[in-house]
Image 1 (cartoon, helix red, strand yellow):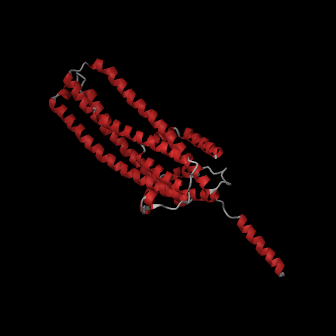
Image 2 (cartoon, rainbow, N blue to C red):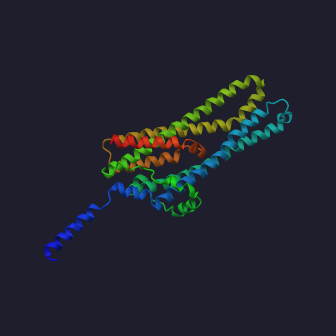
Image 3 (cartoon, rainbow, N blue to C red):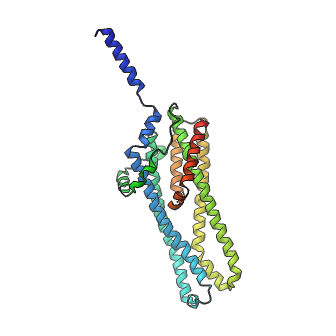
Length: 315
């Protein structure tokens, strides 16, 4: 082999290696399905599920039981429940539940922060974004927590965590365009869930109010009984106010995210700000029961696919 042939061979090999270099989209696809990413997605989902279980407990102890107490005390045949000592005991339970609600809610908030942080780290890694302490806060080593929660995650559900972002039509897009489209898909997903929660919340509130107004005339309560019943509704009222406060905050965050993602001056810094906002939303987000996720899974997957098609065509 002469020098000319050797030179041509080296050039050919170099060009061939260049042609085999992965695009950003291909790298993202690989990262989102590797073991590290799947572990983090599984861990954050399990933490959210545990927080939901505590939320069910709060709703049962703090909301349902006081309401049942209130109704039972109005039934004439249950005379013993109208005893002043029993009434006092019910009131003491209600007050205790208010404090318990505060304690458990505080614990749930911590769990949501852990889960949201794990999800943030996963997104940062998948999108290949450099961590910014000023925008995201200092990095925290959560490896031990991720491993612990992943080990307890149902292995049969791991397949659901693959290919969250459909990147099949993004091969020729630049890095910032791909990240922006993925973030917009996340926004569409969260907006859909928010609308569903909001509808369910309004049905619950107005339905409860309607039932209360409807049954009051039939109970024939005197003033003392009405006051006693009203006291037992205090935990429900505090729960409603707390949930409503979260909904309003979430709506504002979603509006901000929509503006940021639609901004024509979108840049790498914009991507980091958006990730910080998504983290804030996830930390504040209301916990949707897993049974509702299962019930609407097919519909949600369809909506997510439509969001992917829309965002790809829009860009």
